[in-house]
Length: 234
Image 1 (cartoon, helix red, strand yellow):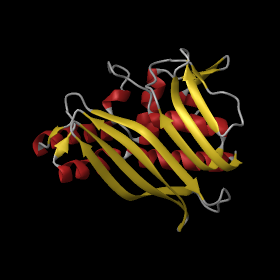
Image 2 (image 1 turned 45 degrees about the horizontal axis):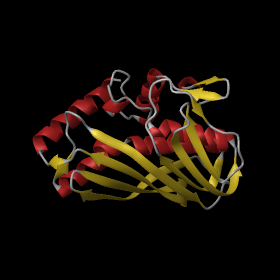
Image 3 (image 1 turned 180 degrees about the horizontal axis):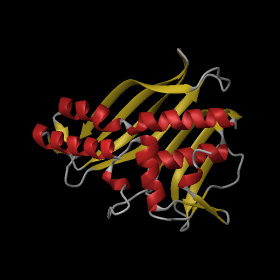
């Protein structure tokens, strides 16, 4: 199973170590955001791994929304409740919400569909920097602080026209947008979900970019080159 190397089950909880989270980000998402490095002082588990574990636990509904409400640290016990409700809250050991899920419609637990959506969505999600975010920052003449980059997954939602597919899914960008508000910005990545050549779903990923400063082409290019070098060396 795709996710087996990236978590352990302990009693009724799911636990993700910093190493497991970092490997998932790098290997499955090609995401080298420093915040997912095990040695980072601000380490957090990638939202894409929480999303994937939620699909693994609850299946794929025709309409789903995932809101990432608090950061998850190294080896934090998480409670994914056993429920058939449309609204689900995943809590940490302090009872604080880390992921809130809304779902509607029919549900599929088909392993092939689950793995196809997880694999293809997280690869799409992981390409945000530099491929998608860099052009938006240049357009708006803002950038994050390269010494303390803060690019945080806020939410994602999708709708599927059908849960019965003929081909492996793939996810493609439909539109990208950056709304700048003083020292932070909200990035919106609208995407289409394809079954072969046919669009069978659509959704949007939202990201918060914090600590904005005036755009410095040389500084952000140097940061991007270092980021890509780490990706290529992995």
